[in-house]
Image (tube, rainbow, N blue to C red; front, side, top):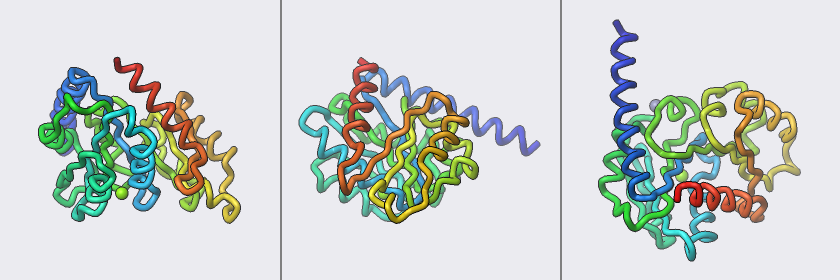
Length: 217
Ligand code: MG
Ligand code: ZN
């Protein structure tokens, strides 16, 4: 009985996710679902990406936070439209929440939309929401064992961004082993090593975004 109810909820979610994706495609908007644990640097990477791309690409951000508007305020300060969606205390974004966010944006004025998901490596990976691409950040201080602990998250994303690379000299994080584990779970995934602080790898990341944008047109 419980399983049936859960299946019904998921298929309703997936139908809305499909509607979201149709709407995005119709408006030539590339939407990227950005996931990670709290503090891995999602907002910092989005802000750096805005800085690098804002002269060529029209961007917007949907911030999914459980309560505060701190991140949305930072994005607006950077000169990019940002809206806050209320997850109602939920630890993930579902398709319906993204749908209500899309209704509040002027999609014809946007090329690239980031959804900053709630900081959590578990259930955000369980929900299709309709973004064409999804990525995750894993910051160096979190450790290289995470692919084994959160395989679903690592298996569903198009790109894994190893953030805070500037911590490497202080860390015993084994990059080769980590990347091997990630590829074992998700052979086609792109892996980027970045540091917003030093600028390492940011061009690889924005180059990937550019390629995805061109693929949409
Ligand atoms: Mg944030
Ligand atoms: Zn959740």
